[in-house]
Length: 154
Image 1 (cartoon, rainbow, N blue to C red):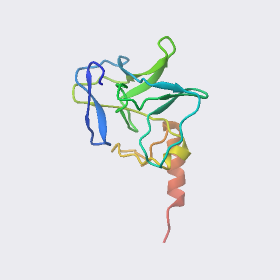
Image 2 (cartoon, helix red, strand yellow):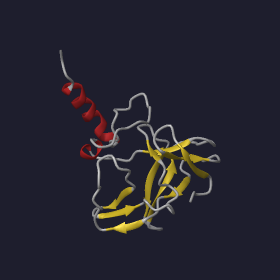
Image 3 (cartoon, rainbow, N blue to C red):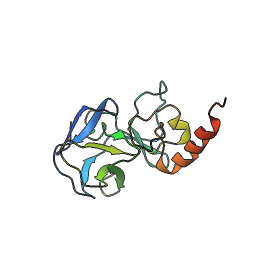
């Protein structure tokens, strides 16, 4: 399933990506992130496995893995062109454009992973300042410092 104005197709970032098929303006809703609400995240069977979980509030998770979730193929990027915003009125998050998007643009957002989560998820977004791990923007400087000081020295 795809939302009006989007399509899923192979991505240069990872697997399938979500792409715009029409123009989107800054602040415009792109697609809802839909799925079953859970009181606890399911156990991940192996590190690096694709995850479609979104924490919508403390202790409440949305499992977006179903094929009926139109936004599930949106990849992470360190310089995303969209963000995931929870709308309490309709009960689920929405991908919202952070900047104008044109047909063919891959729609990306910051997955907001913790340091622990980032250890199992390499980032392949290709951004100039990419730290090489999928990690929330506010945590990237600390990870960058850690990586700089933990490198092997001759």
